[in-house]
Length: 112
Length: 114
Image (tube, rainbow over all chains, first blue to last red; front, top):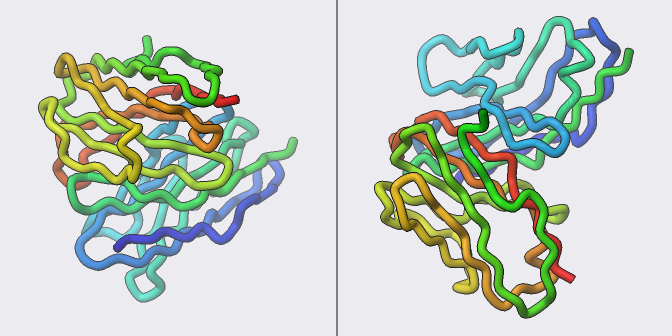
């Protein structure tokens, strides 16, 4: 059974700040870890994913995430956020048959 | 142009009625999925199809029936609607069911059951 935990329901930062959105997971085998973004009223858009190799993966729009086996984490980071980054971010794990299991999401608000 | 079209965007239904949610993808993908997002639960997987065949069903209720008339279509029929069915239903697709195959999501159908 795969579970995903996103401990922060809401994160608020100022434009230009760095941000870290946290994701912890539990799994029973080989998995893919991914992040998706959902702007208000829209569908989800893929940001990045990890399976193996370099634990730091680069995504679109300056986002990156780091896998840690010891911490069972896959936190998402961005060095300098823009107001357009305001959205809900979902962490997900997938394994058998490419089914995605999502966390509850973190709403990121970027203030001017 | 949207690569996955979901219709309608908004839907209001009466308790006990039946509705069909439409999904078409123009990405040439072989796998399609339905997910549900409600206020009470995070995004949850419902069904997956590959080459028009049901591969996985994690929906407890038989009131939810996916229908695939064409390779790039995966509609969702919901019968005997209940207020608890109120949610946004997202259709998605990927090249195949191989682990890590990237998803593309539609913009969703927001269903309200009164």
